Every structure is written in C-alpha cells, then in structure tokens.
Length: 393
Image (cartoon, rainbow, N blue to C red; front, top):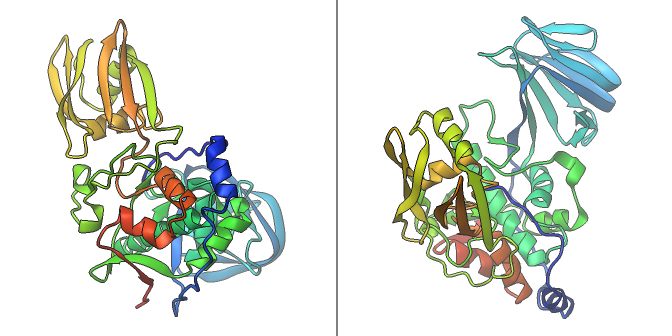
C-alpha cells in the first residue's frame, strides 16, 4: 500500500531514557468489541508453479469452486503443491477444478512454504497463466497480529502500537468493502500492508490489537482508507497529490516535528543514468541518453510533483510519483527530493520514506514517547476523523 517500511533497531539514548522514565505508558482503555468479526482474504502467493504445504493435525480438503469435501486427512508435512493444466496436484493426488481449499481443524496449524498461518487457505489456478495463487482467509484481528510486527517494531511504546493497529484495521476494512467482487481483499506486501502470517506474532503486538479490538477510524460515519507511511519528514501529504481521493482526514498538511529522530529523515541516492534510461525504456517512455533531470513542479506539501527528463531523442515530463515507482521505492524513498547530475549518475537528496499520506509511523513513535495517547495521535494525523467501534452489517 503503502510504503516500504524499515524499522531501525537502535534509537538515541535520550529516546530510550524518555521511554524508561515512563513518558509513554498510559493505561489500556477498555476496547469495544464488535458483534461480528469480519474475515479478510489475503493474497499470500501469486504466479506460483510450486509450493509446499504442511498441516499439523486433522484437516478437510475441499474442491473449488463448489466446496465439495474430497478428502479428510490427518496431517501432512512438506507436501508439494503443483499447478496442472486441469487443476492442482497435492503430493501424488491431482484435484481437477479451479483449485482446492484446506481447512485445518486447529487454528495456526497450517504452513505454506514454511510460514505459519491462521484460518484457511485457498490454492487457485490462475486464469491467464500456468500458475496458481494462494489466498489466506482469516478473521481480521488475527490478520492484524501478523501485520503490526512488519509495520512497526514490537518493542515500541504501546500507544504507538495501538495507533498503528487502528489505522491498519481501518485500512483493511476499507479494502474488504471495495474488493467484494475480487478474489482477494489485500496483498501481503507493501502495495497493501505487509503481512507475515502467525509466524511473526509477538506478545506486545497482540496486546495492542486486543486493547483496540474492533476500533476503527471513520469520517462522517464512514470508513476511509487510513493510509500510513514510515517518515513524513516534517509535513504530511494530501491524498489527492497521489490518487483521486479527497477527504478531510487525508488532506495532509500536518506539521509533524515528531519524526526528526527517524533514521529515514534524510537520504541520498546516486542512480546511474544507464539504469534510469533502462527504466524509461521498460515503462514505455524512451528518451535516448539522458542529458538532464530536473524537478519542475512541487505539490502543496513540498514534494516533487513532476520531473522533466531531457534526452538525446526527446524530452519528457512525468509525474514524480510514477518515476519513484519505476525506479523503486527502496532507492527513491519519497518524492520529497531535489536532483542533479554528477558525471554518469543522477544524485537525489531527499527527506522521509513513503508517500507521506496519513499516519507517520516514526512521528507516532515520537508522540507516544511524549505521552500522547493513541486517540490523540490518530486525531493529529487524520483530522476530522473519529475512533469508533466497527459496526458490522
């Protein structure tokens, strides 16, 4: 979704001392629990031709699309999963159909490619390529257990973890609502929010999820996509700087001085002109040999809006957000940059990591260390929103 999140393993001594002195330890409020816990479908594998499946204990194997029970088993270990022209082969057995569904009798007893998962797993043949994809369906709260450890460090103050839990839950519920006609709701990578199954669950993460169980952000009574990112580096961006979304909580402009100690506040990247030329060709925008790269417009939040790339064959103006995707978000960490040429490279000097919309994760840490509650943190990054129990149906 959202961004490529990297969490530093060390913090300045002053930050550790602030935490130790109790500046971030408010008590856990009672959490409202929704009447019905929704389930979420997570794409955990795609474009696969081979995988391995393990189930500890009893399970049911159902044929898709109808859901007919075709096997009742008692455990399997590292059994090969292979695409076939007619269906899916599991070990020595071929199941003819669109796919198979594995339903373990016990939660957290299913493993796919050595990662453990809650819930059930659908392995489905792709329609346009000779591959299969895997969709893990589980309850939303269990999904969040497997998300937060990847998005923030589990040892961060509990109020920071709670803020992330509410934002992640809100984003997930929004995706559930808008993806009903699709085979899955979210992906397990950074294009949605990073999910590592139950293998990565940690006690403090689960505590934060449980303490906020069922709580979401709403604007005018409706759930919205609660975007988040690693480091805004001073000011958050508006969603309409990147997408066709214009909601009050996502209009950006929050002056965030709380992420100044982030290891991602400043960055620099030198990328060879040959690599940039290759990327331009790959994405259908060849300009020949690059002679100049310059920022020609800025967004209201001070990020690069558009770039002019001048080459030996032609000149092209492209959106900075698209350029970042083409080159890679791990190299161009944000669009808040300046750029110039140095011999055979383009040198970028930038601030922050991620798209800059919504919650700033390192800013959340900074606020929690100062004693702010998760409700105060969410109000700061999503102005006009409310934290409320999720209402199903």
